[in-house]
Image (cartoon, rainbow, N blue to C red; front, side, top):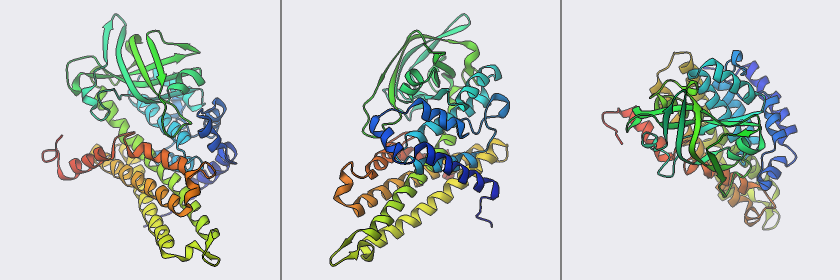
Length: 405
């Protein structure tokens, strides 16, 4: 068994680290979080580094990379921006353009993927509604056919990238789920909805930005659709197939979520180690000499390494799934396990780091709190709540006939 990633992936990681240090280093990531705006030049910088649409086919304008490569990228971005803002932007603009390229028409997918890859366009997921996020089959937003178009009516909430898609960039959209048929999951369709194209907002679309407690660099907002038009050619996967399309995208996105949390947790653990060496008390002893500190760091390292290995296993499984070598159940099992373990571990490590740093960590003099709040966003629900991860694992491990919602 070889635990190395091989020279090509290690070279990719080192090259990416150098690029991210230039893009986000010197405290730039914290400045973005404090300002609450992800600048267009930062987004274009991510495109120049080749981490957007990394997993999309080259013939559509993507990078043609694999999911293990994408997980490494997400991990490094999480490390260089532990607030998670640029990591969230990156993972969304990999998972959902990939799903579009896999199930959408080449004409529609190509125009979007190419712009995403260059950092000119945001393309995420719009599924969550005020009535709930995890119950995708219960979506109320409806799309009514009118000639060659559908008119969409409804409201989406807790949608990532609203400002980036509709204000910061000239192009923006989402894989939007809406009901074209009856109740239940078979009545849902997925649309490549562009809320902004070439600087013009779609008619029938209104939006607002929510005031979140963390992860300020990327916006979270509300989309209100009152007859917004989508051409029938922009249905992804066929009418009535939206639930199945989305259920393929979520496990892939979760792998990158988990990888980004591993990267952020690595940053926090390094801060804890540094502080334990430098902070001295009780006659000049470094606080690392106290077991309450050193044992906490030891446990954090063991947990982080376990989470990283699980993330890599999930990414490896995703590559096999895309090649047709692994079943969807295997992908679900490992992606949910990776998110469950990585997010819990990351949040715990940020908590322990704040305890080690002490009272000053409750101020903006140090930036550990930014990572705590960034990882918290995934603890409470983004890309699926932790209890949903447990349900997925139990369902696919024990059997669907035994574990049901």
